[in-house]
Image 1 (cartoon, rainbow, N blue to C red):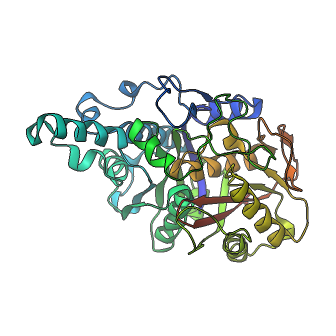
Image 2 (image 1 turned 90 degrees about the vertical axis):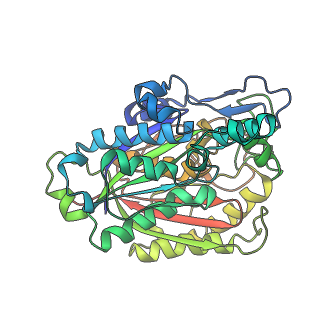
Length: 402
């Protein structure tokens, strides 16, 4: 399968072009949270200049949460980028797969407050569907008449890649195109309190110092909102469409689980390394062929140590370029893996790696990309993602053969 359309709604910009330009320039979207005195985190990756009324009709606005508004907008961007009109397609050949880990938390918080304050009659009739993890998949499929298999993946930060793996299964079973990805809006007070229970949020108030994966001073991650949606098409079909961009081929995906602890990853990184190795094996690719890695970048000492150990196991000491561009957005839960895949596809398309910004003193022997780096021979990249609870996922993207 081939990525032919990219839609981004992220702290780095709206649309693939703005996101890519800001990313190469190292412009971070992490900024101070308003009214953060009582919150467990002071800064977050925030989407600026997003006007939901430009993308969602008023009737639907009252039925859905911000996370679904961003998914609908990102899907519109991706379809336009792919020059694909769903209304001109056989609807049973189109599918939707999204990833979500926090759902419509602001919507849910508002309605629960109404329930406790005023009783059941004060609760919106849309509470049952507005917060639900599958709401974005449902609304996207309704808007674009996608009647093929549709669904949602709930595996936190690994969800974006897990959704991509499901898209691959659907295409192998006869599907022609899948709208796939993930967005999140986990910055409501309720969502932030839930994340605080993990004990891994950064309390640093300086946006330039709050999220520093693989650094000696790493002390937690910064949350963020947004994500990406992709149009993925069957290889032969994509090659028959002159308007298709052909950003990247999804050569292989894999998932494993630590099965150890609800939050703390094992220090040896063995299951994360196994996910990477399986993805490479399914792509028919040796580790020596990988030109760059888009790392998960937990931003905690334990998480970074586990990932560094996994990379050492897979690459056997080879110093492959590693980048963590989500240092410009924060960790977007299920939107993070999808956005990293979008970043990786754009990197293959342009032959440039986006940087890891605000890197501190390195704590691991990694070739960390801290400035945009041109790689004319860039052909194969590995994208790594992890989710709370022990979820691991990896995807191999390759420059598509024309």
